Image 1 (cartoon, rainbow, N blue to C red):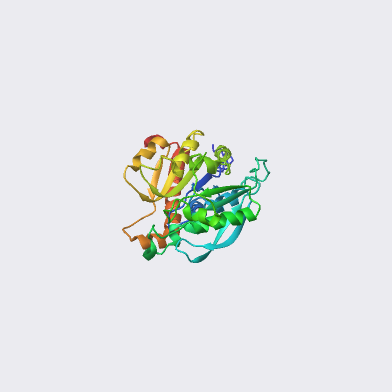
Image 2: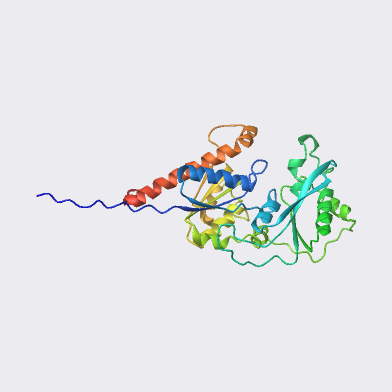
Length: 314
C-alpha cells in the first residue's frame, strides 16, 4: 500500500541584515564610496540582504559630508586659498536635525545646539591638495581653513567642529589664525577622542540591535587599529551586542592579529595580486566591491553549514 504526503513548502530563509560602517581609504576612497562598493559586493551574493550604510570618519576626508548626511544638514561650497597659496573651491557644512536614515518612522534625537558648522582641514589644506612637487611643510598653510571658519560664522554658526585629519600642513593652525586676524593662544583647550566626538552626531549604537553582521573598512589594518581607529571602535561596540565583525582593508600591516582581541573576527585585504600603488588606487572601487563579494560568499557558506546541521564538522 502506498501512502502519499502533501509536500511541505520550504521555509524561506530570512534576509540577512548587514550593517556597513567603513572609514575611507586615504588617497583613494571616501567613506561613502567605500560603503557603496561594499554594498554592491554584498548584494551580488545576497540580493535580498537588508544593507544599512553608515560611512564613518574620524576627522579626515569625508568628515563634513558624513556628518551633514547623518543630520540632514546642508553643504556650502566656498572659495578659499589652498595649502600652496592657489585659489580652490572648498566647502563647509551646517548640521541639521539628526535622523535615522534607515527607519521609516522618524525617531526624535537631540538637535545639535547651538547651530553647528562642520569643517574638515582636508578640504582646504589637505595633503591631496598639495602636488607632490610642492610638499614642503615649511611652505604649506592652513589659511584656507580660517577662511572656511569665517564663512561658517557668516552663515550663522554658533559652534564649529573642525576635523584635522589628512592635513598637508604643519603650521599648527597659524595660517588659520592669520585668516581670522587672531593672536596665537592656548588656554582652556580640551582634547577629546575623535571617535567620541563623531558619535555625538551619528546615532550608531541603535542600529546594532537590528542587524546580523557588521562590515567595516579602512585603508590599513595594523597594530594601531585598536587605538582609536574606526574599525577597532566599531568592533568594540558591536561586541557589546554579540555581533560578528569583519573588516576589509586596503593593506594589512604588521601586528594586525591584535585586532582579534578587540572584536574584529576576521579581516581581509582588497588586493588580489601584486600591484603598484597607482593601480591599487585606480582600481580601489572594483577591488573593494569584489572583496566584499568574497566575504559574503564565505558568510553564505557558513550559513549553509548552519542550516544543514553540519556546522559541527568544522
